[in-house]
Image 1: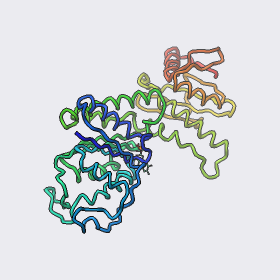
Image 2: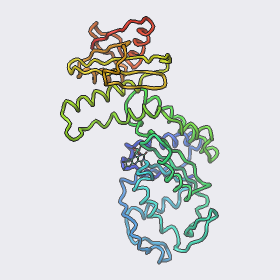
Image 3: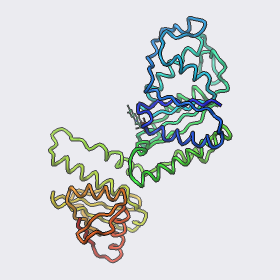
Length: 362
Ligand SMILES: Cc1cc2nc3c(=O)[nH]c(=O)nc-3n(C[C@H](O)[C@H](O)[C@H](O)COP(=O)(O)O)c2cc1C
């Protein structure tokens, strides 16, 4: 079987979507070892826009008026048994690269049209495409499927219904964040994508169970927003360097909280971790409940803390980094095992039990 992978991400092999596509292909290759797989990164190709001249419909062979990489790609497309469409969601649809590629397939159709079974219309294909199968793999930056991916799903359904399987992953931005917890969750997702590829190679379908798991979220919406937003600490108009630094500090504290294991905080009162950024005379509290995380900046809303982390601002970022990669952090009491988000959680749980607030100086 000839498999053609069309990668519509402008980020090529460095994109998020291709991680899932590669996992799917890996799964397929476990069952179908002799498949011929060809990958095309559209970003590396010279493909002009369709000029809408209908030259292709005015000559017998369906020649296009433009000669560029589409000459070769159209042939590859025509000869493929399975096309895997790998694209980011851009502005609530497929990427422009992918859409342009589709438009440039016009010569594979005749100008004449006919009614479809589903009430729509279509141009008559110049070749028999009924045997061709399609898989759409897409990632999005937003958390929500609703009012986000409907257009791309519908688009592919109109084109290939009955011969199409679809994987769409929201929270796609997580695939390039280097953090142990995120990597672990992303790998779990990729394992399911691999299994889906195996199933597809075996039966031509992805099981309902895998489809359901491929729609599961990595994080709750609030956490995802925090983690995604953390990357965009840019100065707002009129912001001083100091205010920008403050924004960065809040972001880091937010992220540390978002990645904490909060399951144990089931009591009526939240666990309270206070970050005392002493060189900036700046304090923030994390109010941690199993179901909700709150970052409190207004001292009026402060609660008695269970853990105080007294840290110099520069070292706060170091703390975040160390926590992320499970490295040791020097505290004022020597090199202590203060690694992993669990380090903060464990200290908090301990002091909640004893009723005594613990202070860690970093
Ligand atoms: C121009 C542009 C438009 C985007 N529009 C959306 C969108 O409408 N909905 C969404 O959820 N994400 C949107 N995103 C985020 C991408 O879908 C997301 O980052 C995706 O994982 C990128 O995949 P890639 O790395 O494979 O290109 C957009 C990104 C760009 C660059």
